[in-house]
Image (cartoon, rainbow, N blue to C red):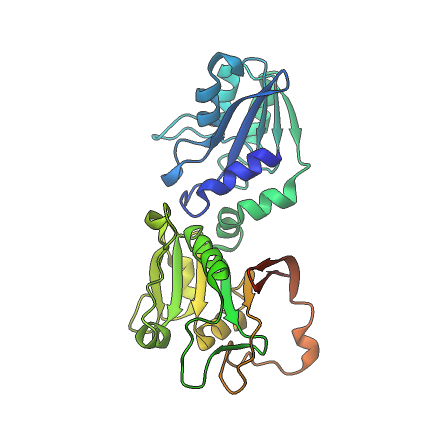
Length: 308
């Protein structure tokens, strides 16, 4: 299942409105097929893995990160039916599909066909891998990641506004990789006008995965953060600045994940990373964030937090 989850990450940010699923077929302790949801949502992971395995699918075990779909589409047959027709013997599913067109029906169809089905066991990593798809269905909006690159004292620029570059090459490369995993990227109007950021992906081989660029402004793409619910084809949204825009998303409880790149420098009287959050007391600031990952990127430290 770990291999299937890794495969699902290959097209994160490119499959909306479909989930980014991973699938591995194993027979006699050998991998005979691998698949992941393709850009645009089709083919599905199971269809790709079955096509690769061919006749070796018969009697195999299928490890898949999301319950196989039970509904046919003009773009392709139901994956539950494909697995049945291929003659797989066992299906291990990390997470059930909340889509009402499948929700439990995929499992039921497989069991009715005599296939042994095992559910659960990797729910937490599967939820993390498909956070965009799941958040869109649970909350009706994209999964939002807020990225901040700061000095040790929480500044994002000198008092003059100079901000290039706070972090080093490795941290900036990681930030570009994050851009490639999102359908859209958003900044505030002032940041767009003053910094004129390109907001693209400048990693060799990934240039085509630059996200759609959005501006938070009454005269731009969005007039308020809550408008992100109406973004069609966007299940992962990356918010990159500036301070007031970041604070607005935080105040409205719309940030699901926080990327904090911290450079080993002190700036002093510079520009703060965040605007006013409207806290009445310090007690209300605690318990909102949970550290999920930390690593060094050159001389900079990355900390990843999830909303509690």
